[in-house]
Amino acid sequence: MNTKTPDLAACKALIEQNAPRFRLFFDILTAYNARFNLTAITKEEEVFHKHFLDSVAGAFLLPAGAAVTEVGSGAGFPSIPLKLVREDLTFTLIESTGKKCDFLREACRALGLTGMEVLHTRAEDAARTPLRERSDVCIARAVAPLPSLAEYCLPFVRVGGRFIAWKGGADEVPLARRALSLLGGGEPDVYRYDLPDGSGARTLVAVPKKKHTPAQYPRGNGRERKHPL
Image 1 (cartoon, helix red, strand yellow):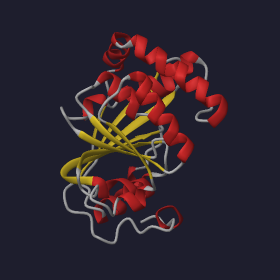
Image 2 (tube, rainbow, N blue to C red; image 1 turned 90 degrees about the vertical axis):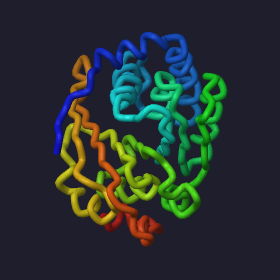
Image 3 (cartoon, rainbow, N blue to C red; image 1 turned 120 degrees about the horizontal axis):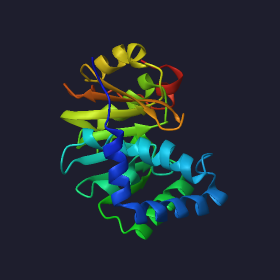
């Protein structure tokens, strides 16, 4: 397991280079949040650190021109900040709540983002469509514990691609080793960092896809969460 640290100064510079669109995204987020309760974090500085900077921290892990699937897109983190700094990427956003899908589509439209497909569906259903093992990368942030999240995400990743999870400061990898192995994942790389101004310890877990995911996964009917591998 390789442990490294993202370059947060470089991430801040990327955000500053795209400051007008990040400001517009903040305005859209706060306007919709009053109706849809997208996030409990609404102060501008907190949104910058805990949402924008945290999302962009993983940009260096995405290869050029990657086709990316995001599971549980919610308010668009990390996908929309990543797209704002990496226009070479294309995204399929999977979200099970219709109002959040409406927000994601409106945000992408207002920001002029192309290559952003929003799908109103559950990950366990989408993984049994032609989306299965099609993506170079599957990403997720603040969705589920790592063993459950791996079962949702690894089925979307092609062999040779990567699953990336944005997690808190705790090390969830030991609990997920069995799940990663069963689902075709290899040894993860772990990247730890502290967000500025006491905004919290964070971890990126990057799992290579070594083998095809067996056809029985994801199991569906909530078993990913109720009975994690």
